[in-house]
Length: 415
Image (cartoon, rainbow, N blue to C red; front, side, top):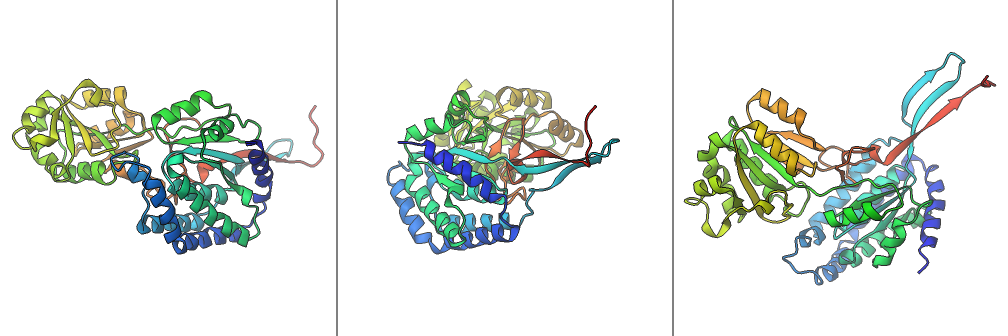
């Protein structure tokens, strides 16, 4: 297949977006939100075909599964993005030099944004909305697991674009076959940046093989440290929410670190998890404390490989530490630099944790489940970057822009 034709059309379409008014852009997104809801039955029918191909025990199953409520949430995210101010044209710097040159640093689109993702059909709508709002063309390469779902959502998007006589090449969904991924990785000169969303193996593969600059949206190996002064009731609620709210997402809790002086509170701290059917992998000291209270069929002794694992399921590693310093060392050794949290009433310990932990999002006395573009007030997200160049954490509208220098003169020449 000639994939180059997709890339050429996308690059040409990128020149048309910059002239769209904010009123038109926002109207498209609001109409698309309504169209998704109207077409709920069609989208769910397509999603059912995808779900039929995947075992229910697969960690990706929950990410793949759509419902009327989840489609409504997708629509709400589109409306939220429409309601935000676009960063395009924002003046980041403005100065007049001694020679009277007027120099401004102004936000502009990245251009053509490629996104490779797995079984997450909501990404199709999220990425389009954020790219469209920021004047970027989106080239999407979804996984074969979500092929029918993605095609259904793409059809609705193109239907709305046609209604506004906007070039439908501003959104391209590449065929689901692997060859399309290989072509996208080599589309230098057509695609300006590539963003992988999915498993660590996918992210590693894209990073190692792409000829295009990559923004990594890494896997989440997430820790929470329950400090010596941690509030028990806060801790129970935070840990339960971070682990069980939605286990298949990257902000889900994977490892609980407990101060050794609070070991006796561990059964009470984790009692809600037993009700949530969470399997624990506890180190020796934690296992001894828990074995008389936690359900035996859900309690296991931890082995080294349980620490540093992104479970994406109802599983949690538990480890005792002597103090904050040991907790910080453990996190430094095993963190994927996504989201990390401390539960503590000690202001000094909280300040040290927030200052020293190297992660895209750090929390004090709150669930890591909040690491999400919509929750951060970004409308939606194109991914959660765990790297440090260009963007870090949930990537919203501003993270989909670059800048250029605009220089105005009146005949100045350089001597």
